[in-house]
Image 1 (cartoon, rainbow, N blue to C red):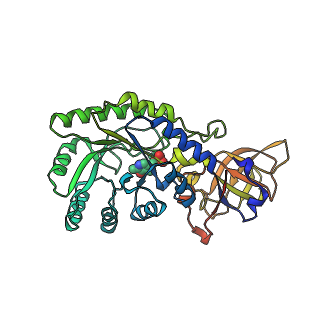
Image 2 (cartoon, rainbow, N blue to C red):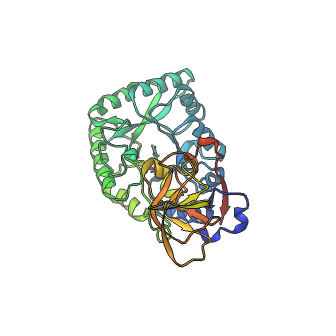
Image 3 (spheres, protein in one colour):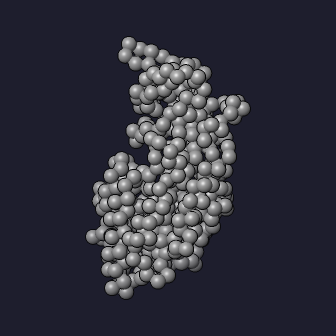
Length: 382
Ligand SMILES: *Cc1c(COP(=O)(O)O)cnc(C)c1O
């Protein structure tokens, strides 16, 4: 995608995010192809990237929204997502956020605790409405991803753990202004093995059986998101392995008549279509290392500092064929403001343009103005 980045595009000033909309459309097309003919509904997790231009493309593909705040509900409405395809998760929904979801008639609250369920019931009753909910279950599956992005073990703050589930389901059945639609799961993010998803299918089947025997039928199961992408070889694998991912659920879930499966994909939809474009401010040497110092930093792309994540880095302008080893760093006054250590790049000079690839997810949406920096802008190709 970075071949499409022209000098003209860079005149707006660096750093900025460059999005390849044709790759985004191909990605959405690949997903729609896999779910066609199946009772599957895909939601897009807005927290991965809420750039309005990106959202418009996703709305056009008919995908729903997965939301984690009241402002995200408003942004999804603004972007034209169908409220009937909106699910809202989060352990700490405040009253105004719950009210917003109720006022906008969203499809489902993914409820994470009993107190939350009671408040939704109470506010819905006050408004004379009945709200759809799913209970977020903590299935105690280790997704083998970074500990900051694993969400489905008993040590995590998310969801209701299985020993308490009977009690919570019964409670939901007895509250008059909520309607229990089903169970919700989300086991983590950047999951690169399908094994955790197979284990999830088994847990889901067991729970559906168990509740069916007790007279509780679910109209839907929400299996969350988390499908990983290839950060090391983005050019070879620009589209996530959707075929294999959806096949796990096609083969693994024992669905009941009329039952739907909801998915909440974030990263795998938008990560590869975005690159962070930056200019080299200085190349600096000390007694042991060479540093490439960029005008982009952790305020523009937090993942390396927050999760030790590595993104592929490309020098867009160097004509050199000789390679050199650099630490690629940002300008922020924090030692963790490092994009990569010991990165091999062609000989790099002040003024070169650098692309940090696979930055479309949890990039722009996590940007901050720490050090009083400007937020990164965005440009679109394709
Ligand atoms: C973040 C999140 C997602 C999306 O996760 P990805 O790893 O980006 O696919 C889905 N569901 C919930 C509840 C989330 O919090």
